Length: 109
Image 1 (cartoon, rainbow, N blue to C red):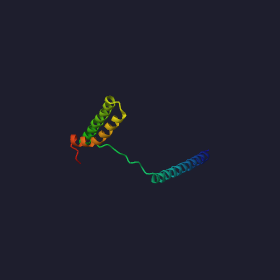
Image 2: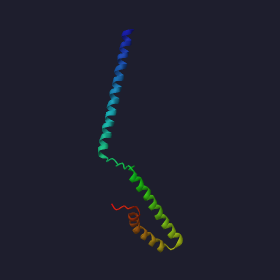
Image 3: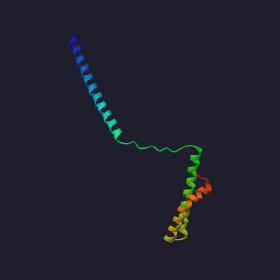
Image 4: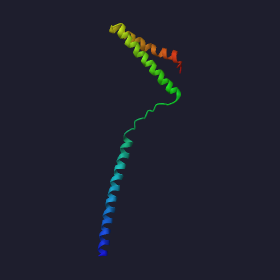
């Protein structure tokens, strides 16, 4: 009886070993495939925000400039309903924003 149990246990262990080898081969093939496609497809560049004091200050200044720009555009539409005048204000605003930023926030570089 014990010889029979030992033989069955050996068969189970052999079957388990074959299954493990097949699983390992399948995982290795998948890893090789993923590595191959990872080499072909370029990774997207992760852009991270800078967290320093100067970066936070510039973000806050950019928000102020954007809000002022939108306010000027809204006032132009409200005060003069003409699309031609509003377009002229838009063009003038786009030309003057860099000048205002340079003068107001001392960004010369």
